[in-house]
Length: 567
Image 1 (cartoon, rainbow, N blue to C red):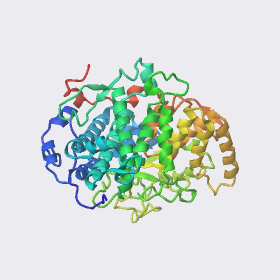
Image 2 (cartoon, rainbow, N blue to C red; image 1 turned 90 degrees about the horizontal axis):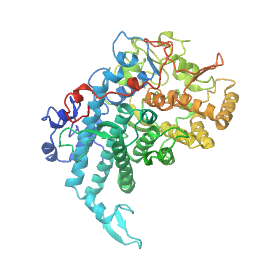
Image 3 (cartoon, rainbow, N blue to C red; image 1 turned 120 degrees about the horizontal axis):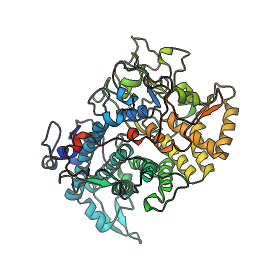
Image 4 (cartoon, rainbow, N blue to C red; image 1 turned 30 degrees about the vertical axis):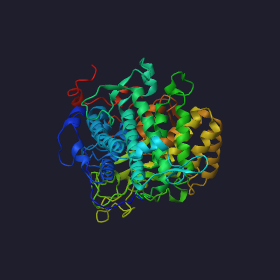
């Protein structure tokens, strides 16, 4: 029904705004449309959603290129990604752990710009289609597009227009949940820090909340965190319900467009990040079942059977460069028209392409983290161990590489097209969410089952003792909670390195045995330290509870402009 075309975007989106109030009131500039112009468009829902998706990869500078640059900010800030040379200037503020000040303006404008167009879609569905009225009157379809009563009689039959509106509505709500969940991740302290500071989940003011109902009302005051939580939950659960009811008629083929499983994944990760630690009081209704919900939605995505953990035989050959990989749930097909060139993840990280990494600005795995990876683990080979081409020590030369040039770094061979696809979500993250949720629910056997579903495919067949060592590892993490949580943290950091999960893993789990074990010296460092290969502050201790460093501040463009913000 819904076909993916190669037409130019019907509606491009707002890229940057000085502040929320300014962003709400400004006249049309470039591809930006005011509500009246938007309402006059034909096929406005498709055009606007394509515009929302385009913001996921819109380029502004060589270190500002949408979601994948945001992923890098977090991974550099927490130290899992090391910028080994600052000579080119890009991402230096993140390596120096100044992301809070240097990036807050971009994060703010990026997500609020996305929210502006999302809210237009939601408003249009509510005001200019028959969909929600029919749903309120007849209910959701339960047989194709038909609504049948208990006796099998057809009560109502949705038409194609309503069906399309339902899918765009679900996509818009999913993306709104995604945008606000990311705002929470970056601009709100962890739940433990909120409680330690004397806040609860009803009185912490976080950031303005804009929906289709108030988006034209000018600047808004800071919303309380429970208001944000409730909107995220409502948006994503509603999206899942609409995808479930109307999605059987959905024929979209692009993984750039979110679907029911992406919505489940966003919601599962949101619940995981909002939960308190094991054993803490859960008298607040908002803390009652977050881990159970995280497990429920992650497990639903897993059981959809649409995706596959990267199998052992392919661990070193995917290059994370192809949208069609069976582990990818959400991503972007990079084309000649959409590539950012040097201003892209590939242009910053892939040494097999004409990139900053290739010419010396290597983005490498933290050395201390590399030393934690067991010798049986094939993922060690994702990162250059220095035995060959030591110029690129610990760079991810076997995790991220060009499909056109997977091996060579010779000048005549490097890829100058930058057409590697961008990954936004993989099924492996759902297994990690489920494993962590089970751990905090006190279900160690189940937690180990989810985690080893990944690690079963990560045993290096070229290491003679790997099978024996891994068998011992499986036994230990299935019976020893302390060893399990260390394995869990390591897998979050290594399996998803470069994919934007490092900062939240650090913030969420550091206080719970986030420590380093050195297999060579058989010693454990209780402190989190930066590896020796960082260009800045190598070996320094990192304090997870320094929320002034790891929680973004509201940018001055907003505080100076929005007179409704509290002092």
